[in-house]
Image 1 (tube, rainbow over the protein chains, first blue to last red):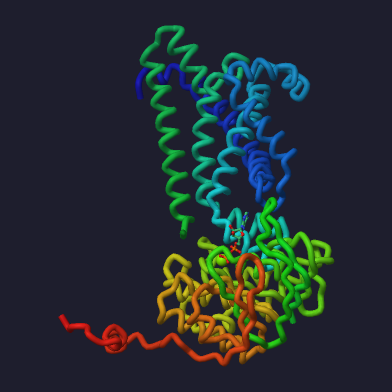
Image 2: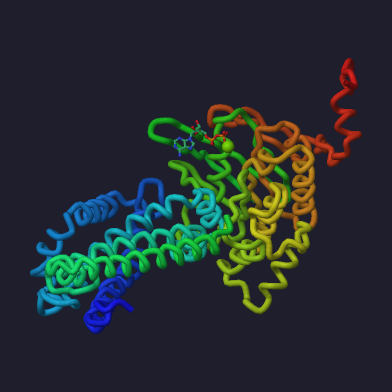
Amino acid sequence: MPEILVQYEAEIWSSIGETFVMVGVSILAAVILGLPVGTLLFLCRKGQILENKVIFSSLNLLVNIIRSFPFLLLVVFLIPFTRFIIGTAIGTAAATIPLAIIAIAHYSRLVEQSLLDVPKGVLEAAISMGASVKEIIYKFLYVEARSGLVLGLTTSIISFISYSTIMGVVGGGGIGDFAIRYGYQQFKTDLMMYMIIIMVILVQLIQFIGTTVSRKIDKR
Amino acid sequence: MIKLHNVTKKYAHFRAINSVTLEIEEGEIYGIIGASGAGKSTLLRIMNLLENPDEGEVVVNGQVLTNLTSKHLREARKSIGMIFQHFNLVANKTVFENVAVSLELARFPKEDLRNRVVECLQFVGLENFISKYPAQLSGGQKQRVAIARALANNPQVLLCDEPTSSLDPHTTGEILDVLEKVNQRFGVTIVIVSHEMDVIKSICNRATVMADGAIYDTISIEPKRMLGTDDSPKYFVEQLTKDGGVDHA
Ligand SMILES: Nc1ncnc2c1ncn2[C@@H]1O[C@H](COP(=O)(O)OP(=O)(O)O)[C@@H](O)[C@H]1O
Ligand SMILES: [Mg+2]
């Protein structure tokens, strides 16, 4: 193992740990809240079973606004909210709040898009069989859209990793922050390169898993 | 079994269905035919309230569907099967799961579910395709799965929207045989929308001709199979040459 990695081993591991916490919370937020928000966006569209212009337009606007913020400004903008929730705006825990919010907005849009790919006829068949809204969602929509949902989550996770790299500004830490502070700012270019390699491997791995799983569950 | 009374359906200011009244008897195979855009599908979809009419009353099996709460409407729909031109199977569910889901929706007892699914698949001749996915089936096989799915809950009515319009004539004949068997074996009232005259003549006891969202005429007919289930090369050659003058090149 290269000398410099041995020298910084402890810091590297803790920065990897921080990245995992930040990305992990983002994934949870995406699945627990982004999935329902995206589903609601889809269902409230014109011509869909819960068609509702007010809910659709407001959610749509909210998601667009969050997504159009330059992420760094979103982090700053959310500082009061973060402080209210976490008690502080600094540190890894605080960093998870803006990450969770962008995660919800990001994944909900991809969920909406995946659900739009489900043939309308399948939902009509579901309705004709007397399925309730909940049954339509769980027994038809998610089943038919599952590979798109997985692929979307994969894309999202990779974006979350990217977003997490700038959380150094609020002391969030993580691999990206480590690479900037030790590698870039202290001119340890080799250390920076190693961190980038770790990120590349991580992204490749996630993409590989995501693509494989989505292909496996796609029977269309 | 099905009564529509002064039913009107508007899309913006366009009347897709214009004050239609009709009655379909129990056990009938009832055809609806007409040009594209005549309103056949819309009329059929009104029979299970997939389209909500703007005016008029829809009565199926003694229940006024247009007066039901959404919960009761969902219950009522479980005894109104429906099949479609493009089958509308769930591509990510196996043949078994596609049929099973309709039973699950009706809270069919779990312990009997498997047997019931197999029974339905046997009826349509697909018991050997249980664990296949729709993508692995031919069009005719997909429509059989859809029929099994629609029959699983012992419906009183089966609504068919162009059920054979994406199938070749031979497969069309086979599907019509299955529908006829459904009608005879279980007494299911069948409503079949088609733009193909041969389909209607093959299977219906009565047929309504639609034009511009209204009923043009309704005729009682003696069903006579127009579509051979013969798909031997000899039959094809006979058909090609029967009106004379074709060379065997
Ligand atoms: N959702 C809709 N919105 C607007 N117009 C529609 C809609 N559905 C059907 N129509 C119109 O209603 C008429 C009847 O359609 P349809 O019942 O599908 O005809 P058919 O099945 O006889 O071909 C057509 O002119 C069609 O364009
Ligand atoms: Mg039609």
